[in-house]
Image 1 (cartoon, rainbow, N blue to C red):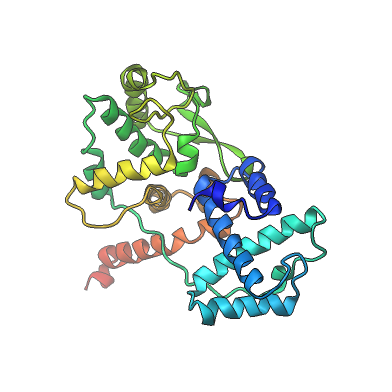
Image 2 (tube, rainbow, N blue to C red):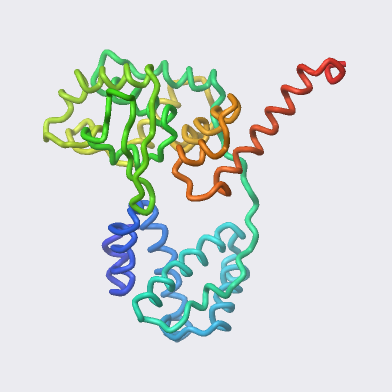
Length: 304
């Protein structure tokens, strides 16, 4: 869906999406998802002759029923759409466009907790062997893999890295996360070696437009989150793995492997940039399975 075409519908929506982009530092994909949810809600209101600025609690509940029964949406999808509207109406109320946020009163359906999918150590090694480090793009691609796994940063944070954000002296990077919150992440020596090689050779050749961004695409422009996904898709096709992967799996792997090696949950939370431990605690389900495996493998009586 084209974001510009989508936002022609309502000025309040345009202003809201601008707010999410500038003030909250949301990615383009997130903006499109929020915008799409709200546009579909606008279309529903128009079909029912409802003014979205004056919608009542009962009318909001009817929209919830419509999502469930009319569209047969899954609980997770309904939760996302209602969350989008809650956030939108919070913005409208804050800016005195509406008197109340009726969607805040709705009970969201409980979503099934999905355990994060992550790479095993040997699977990561398969990925890291694919890029050809004798080429400019190969040097870039191996660095993408190494930094995502070494730091646990989001892809949106990865493509936003500027050269001045990198401190080679103490192996750290200043990243700008959700809500424009800055944090320091660290990388180990293998990632540093890939970084120094790319800075010395690959990036110099690729960066014909003199960008300040760390990652450059094959046309000399700044690499996008979609570009990173395409790169990983091409890499995975060259391996023997059959699983579907996403860049976020490297973030999941980072957190899971740290916890498996004994890192405390609070430190992982801070490295991931989570606002609370709740989001980070989902990884404990995975590490608990790992502990169970270790127990049955090593306890003398359990082995019997």
